[in-house]
Length: 253
Picture 1 (tube, rainbow, N blue to C red):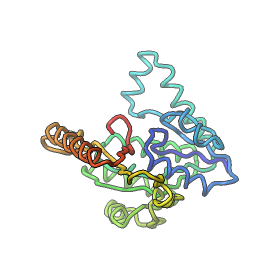
Picture 2 (cartoon, one colour):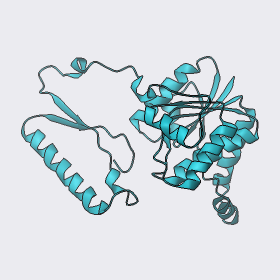
Picture 3 (cartoon, rainbow, N blue to C red):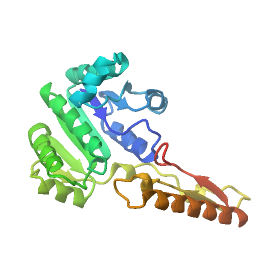
């Protein structure tokens, strides 16, 4: 089969890259193309698949602006996506909190991709995703209608996502599966301790307070969070620990 895979890949987010690795394990022996936010990054770690640039917003106003301003490279990305869909037997949207309205544009983006796949007659499945929170009636209607009309099967990563899907009218061909980020081949912590060295402390940070649409006093919260992290790191260093920071996001982290 020719399979086109879409998700939040190529951003340097460790969880998303593990999800992609587990997804590709399921499609061994098939011809897979992955849509990536950063093609060289994905090609480096997944050389066994074809990689295309992730497409951009499908809002008419955005497309019209790109046409008027002669942004041919951006228009070409959308065209390449449509051609890849047309050649594919299966379109897979996989992994992560892709169907939520924390950032409404993200929900619209993936629903638009699913609608295009349906338009070309390409079968669609959604694997290991989080659904919700859903904040607007428009978003709920759009999600329910798109999945019921265009998606052949869905695996959500938790029970609450299943409840959220049921609440928008999606009840058929949907099940709960483990989060693909937790299906990786993990290294035993004992094997990571370097002989003769004190224990290491690894911090995973996510700059969630930077989103002013979610948090009140976001700037104050963000500065307080960073100040606290700095003080914690200095304390650990003074105590003789080795500190490492493992980013799960990109520029925010």
